[in-house]
Amino acid sequence: MNSLQKIILALALPLSLVACSEQESSTPAPQTQTSAQSPGTSVAPDKGLDYDYYVANIEPIFLKHGGGFVGTDTACVSCHTTQANAPLGLQPLTEINGQERWTEEQSRQNFNNVVMLVNPSAPETSRLLLAPLATTAGGDRHSGGNFWNSTDDPDYRIIADWIASGDPDAGADPIVELDFDFFRNCVQPIFVNPIDNAMPCIECHAGEFAIPPPPNSYWTVDQSRLSFESLSYLIDPGRPESSRFLHKPLHPNAGGDLMHNGGRRWFSQDDPERLALAEWVRGNARGDQCPAPLQFPNPPRP
Image (cartoon, rainbow, N blue to C red):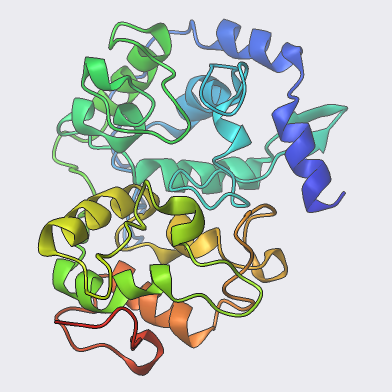
C-alpha cells in the first residue's frame, strides 16, 4: 500500500471504529499510576500515565469523526500522522482484519508522542487539550479546526481525567523559545526570494506569515513581529521534524507532504537552507548573524 492509499484510507475510516470509540470511552477514569520498575532499570518517560487506559480510551478518540477544517467528518488521524508531520505525530494506520487500526508497536510510539504534549501537574494547560478546544473556550488556534466547544465535552473530559491521573510532579515538556532577531534578519527574507521551480512564499501566504515588505525597503519591526507571530503556528519549537514550516515545502520523496501548491523549495532534508532553518527551530540560531544559506540581498536593508 503506498502513501497516497494510506492517506485516503485514513480519511475514510470505517464507521465501526467510531462506534467502538464511543463505546470504549465510557469506561471509568484511570487510577493514578506508580512506577514499578525493577532495580537498576530506568523509568520510562510516561509521566505516570496508564498506557492500557490510553489504548482503550484515548487513542480511539483520535479516530472519531469530529469536524474541523478538512471536511465535515475529519478525524485527528487525518492530519496528525507522520505523513503530515504534525506535533501529535500519530503513526499511519495499518489494515488489520479488514479495519484500519494501529499495531501494538505503533500504539506505543503514539503514546510516547502524546505524553510529550501533556502536563499532569496542570492538565488544562496540556497542548493535547488546548489545540482541539475552541478559542472561545480558552483553546489555542488549531489549523485543523475546533473539535470541542467547551471543556464539558465528553472526549475532553476523558482526556483531561487521564492526564490528571498521572504523576502530579510531572510537568510539561520545556518549550524552546524561537529567536525573533534571527527570524527578522535571516528567516523572513526567504519569503520573497524564490528558487527555481518554486513560487515565492509571498505569492500565496501574503495574508499570513509572508507579509510584503515596503517598496524598495526592508520590513518594519512591527511587520516582522506580525510575520513572526503568524509563522509560529506552523512551527513546533524544538522539533524540526514535526514543524509544518519545514515539512510543507519539502519534496515528498524526501519525506514532505504530498501537496504544496507553491512547489518544492527543498528536495532533501539535508538541503543547507533547510538545515539552517532547523537549527533556528531547535533554538540554536540566535542574533542577526546569518549563516551562508540564509544570506539574501533582497529586500534591501536599511
